[in-house]
Image (cartoon, rainbow, N blue to C red):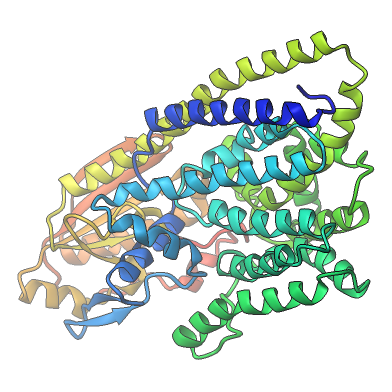
Length: 503
């Protein structure tokens, strides 16, 4: 099955791939995601709620003025939230989890389609369905899988359509999808540019269609940013920034971990002899070096978690590596006897199923811990109350569905705010989720809590250890003295890792 296939075998390969996808779907539903686990997911879902209500913004209580004001839930690209919106109309917000799953499966089918067009086995698409980063982010409400769908769709249409001058519409829609992919991740340009520029500069058939499609595809991105920010060329700020500070660390981390998660695939890709060889190597090099200079992506967290979360930036390279590596693998497999090839293919397929069970079970257990934290917070606070928390560490547990709470970062709270809450009879709680790998931040947090305890008679009502996180919930009884939160710049005086904010 891993050898050079004759056209008569393609239907059988597709059937085998579809059957495995069906098995994967059953396993995925068995370990249905429990709850969101990152602050990014929170922002995407909150923005999707606004879209579902026909709005760009939501209402938030201004504690100082004690009036509701408009608030933009997310400052990131809107594509992910837009794809979530239809699922919110189905009644249960958790159905949104099917969005990244559908995107993941469609990406695998797009990869299989290109493999077939290049006379390779569609079963090589299993390399994407078993890529741990793709499996995990197929269960998370992040931009990665939606972005992969539009990005891979654009690249697949280009890969196939560029050699079919009689079908310029494929290049047109490749450009459209490339432009739409900017609603998810701007760095797609780094991978697509070598292919598109090569085609245009060499004046190959369909270049005009590609340009026009790309321009049309960019219009929704420009329109949204003009509507929200008044500037169609607006870009979100990058808090991590770029520097040489972590270049060698990222060079080793991404280089080794990618080959660990997709064993040897990047090395095999360098043996590729097919079409777009120069463009493929250029795209990989440009994109890889870009993220080596990017400050984010190698945070001081658990190694297993870091291995998955940081490598999500490398996801756009996965289809390129699979398409490229399939060529030498097919050449080598052709040297084996047919019975050996069939035995090898069957053995690999059999191993895939327990692998999925183990991987999905592990992520399900980690997600269940996040659900446990949320349950503790909601069990020890009241609907409509004010919750003071340590920003992204806790905000993700307070979704805007069900029993709402007014939530605020501890740096945003002033004395007048707490007095207003007392005057209006609104209870105030604090909920702080702490992690051991951010010890540099604990001093600032302890100082704030100590001051709040001194002036407000803060009493702990719940302390719980869940996984690697410690949750502490208190109720603010009264406020007699001015409250002066620790300034943000004081948190940075402890020389934290540059990859993280102090939240």
